[in-house]
Amino acid sequence: MSRYADVIVLARRAEEVMEPLTRPDEGREWYQCFTRVDDHVFAGEGGRSEECYAWVIQFIRHNWTRLLAHLESLPWPYPWSVQVMIRDEDDDCFGLWMLYDGKLVEVPLPHTRRDPFPASLSGVLSRTDGPRD
Image 1 (cartoon, rainbow, N blue to C red):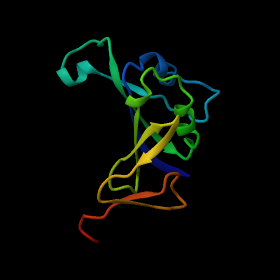
Image 2: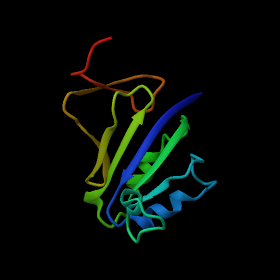
Image 3: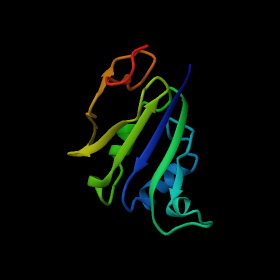
Image 4: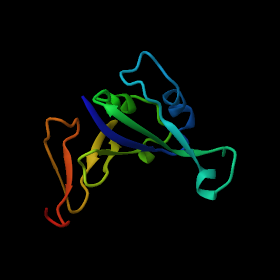
């Protein structure tokens, strides 16, 4: 079943930790690779910066069920800086997960509600302050 989910990982000085996830690996559950978003992108410059704090990926199938567990298991140099943002195709906005005691935990966002949804791995995140359809 096709289902889109966008994921952004933000983490300080995590280039070495994230680098293997930017390459294909048959041992992983998912085949997509993260794309590094360097500082130069924001400065409008060419080349590659020394430091990177952001990586992005888009999943087009339900093949990312172990992603959060995999990210939890990585040796983050600054675990308090790790933020994972996920937006499933039916979400109104990105949800935010942060590491607490070694586990990625969803951080409640103001004016949002997450409801179970069988077609989604994370449920559906809705804004509670938006217009009603």
